[in-house]
Length: 297
Ligand code: SAM
Image (cartoon, rainbow, N blue to C red):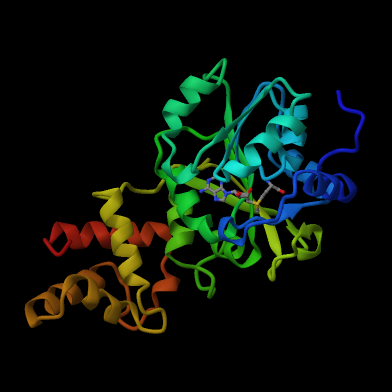
């Protein structure tokens, strides 16, 4: 194993960047993490063991990858920036359980990749990443839409997005993103991370979010998952308006539709003036199913 300091140390990061002439690219959301404690805490929050297969999104120059390689059975890292591939190959050469692929995660076929890249694809599969912030939501939605049974998704993101993911009904952070996550996963913030530990420093603070499969079963199934989430997004289209007003934007506002809508709300004991952020996931499913039953969805 290499005698150099670990990649995530400030000195080693600087040395690597200088040696390979790396200039971070804003367009790829490149903010490299240079704090070994934070890196080790991420691996700990993900509860990585030698039995785990890990997919890392955006290894950068390999700071987190190195920590994952030490803790996991096998690591497959997907990096969009072709310029970083030769760097990663060289700095991660001491670890024979790491594969680096030049891939855009948003275009990757994850089930296929898992079958092809992991020696034993049946082992628990975890995603660990310091995400490129400009595509946090599409990446998370892509992971959740894929048929892979993630054992855990442990990712760093902008603190404000982390708060939306873990928000409770009635708060201003609560919305369609919260519910899309909650539908499949239990979400918690493991810890916050200061902007000062990145090179370059972003202009926001960050947090580590750990998503694990829901322990509690959903109280009820939606008539159609895709349609449910289109419906929920519609209900939050105008946050400051009532559910009643938003609903008219979703299902229509002609007198007959309004009359039906009124009946459904009364039946579910939802006051017309209630705000969308007051409803929990079960209530949204119940409402969508009831609207579907009367032909409005
Ligand atoms: N893991 C490194 C660290 O913690 O220092 C780098 C994290 S940096 C915030 C995000 C990384 O994601 C960059 O290396 C960037 O090039 C990469 N990236 C951006 N968009 C990507 C995409 N669509 N697919 C894969 N990697 C991507």
